[in-house]
Image (cartoon, rainbow, N blue to C red; front, side):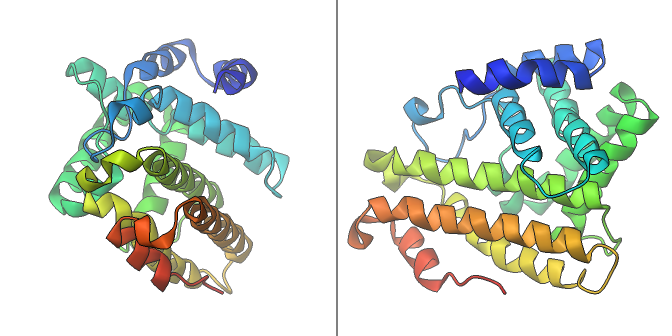
Length: 254
């Protein structure tokens, strides 16, 4: 983690206006993966800023143009800032997790609405467009909106999602004595969204976003295969029952 900070803190500083960089610095105080039944020892150090820096480290590996890479970096640098700003102002120290939002649709919509309101306050026009493109891609994948996403929004959404899914399962593996306390939705979400998001990507075949959809599917496939590989460290009969079921039913989407 320290290596990522050294390598990408200057990158993100160059991407953000000073007032936004200040928000990102404070994102180091916002804990991720709380309320999922994971013990504090495994989630310690997993904060919103660390997540952002990891995402930036992935962009240059992608087979996309420099223009798209730059837009992706800017999007990923800002995508959590409205949430961070709100949490800081309300005195909270942890974000709302994806499994929590997946279980409570009204909560998800409420969080999205309040974060967009904050985005309209802290972002300039260009930043707001990138933020809304990211949000629209998320809504498209969740089948809440039929508006075709942008290439940048789509790619960034999968980088964001894949990082969360992979780190969740890595932490679960390292928290073996605590599995009985795990949130059930957290154990299943990556597998459920793999199926539903892959189906949504199929809609983009034959459109101008076909290449971006293919790249997104490749990113998603690699993440799920990495999750499958992680669980090979544990004998099948010792896995949490939901993980057993999800792995047994998992098939790569062609």
